[in-house]
Image 1 (spheres, one colour):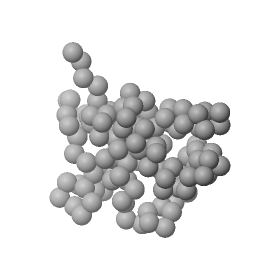
Image 2 (cartoon, rainbow, N blue to C red):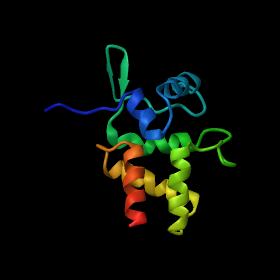
Image 3 (cartoon, rainbow, N blue to C red):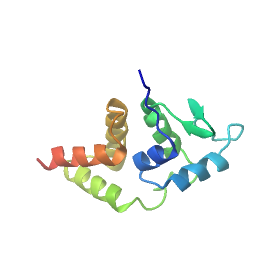
Image 4 (cartoon, rainbow, N blue to C red):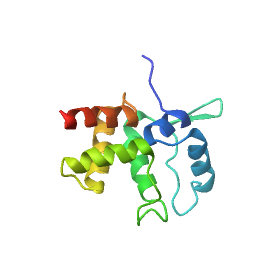
Amino acid sequence: MTEHFLGVLGIGEALGVTRHAVHKWRARYPRDGDHPFPEPDVDVDGAPGWRPDRLAEIVRWRDGLPGRGAGGGRPSAARQEYLKVAAARGLDQDEAKRALAVFAAEFPEMTEPEVRAWLMEKWRG
């Protein structure tokens, strides 16, 4: 049976960033640093891969990046829309992010943008 892994492109799509951002994180936060990027589960001809069930771990890693405590920069337009819809349902930003991480871990076959779209559709009724 073939196993599915997320590469830097899949991680980037799930987190709403470019693959270039994922490459930069890996370079800036090496395994021997203070806040190491999660090590890949597999390497195929130099291309790293992570099990989809580790996406929540990677989201937690990103949320713990230095400087992210006071907002962590401006979220993407798609994430802003998600947070707006979540707020209309009574969730604060932390609750909305936790919900996204939980559902992304529960449905590893879906990317973060797909999970966001699904949740917004459910919340909008």
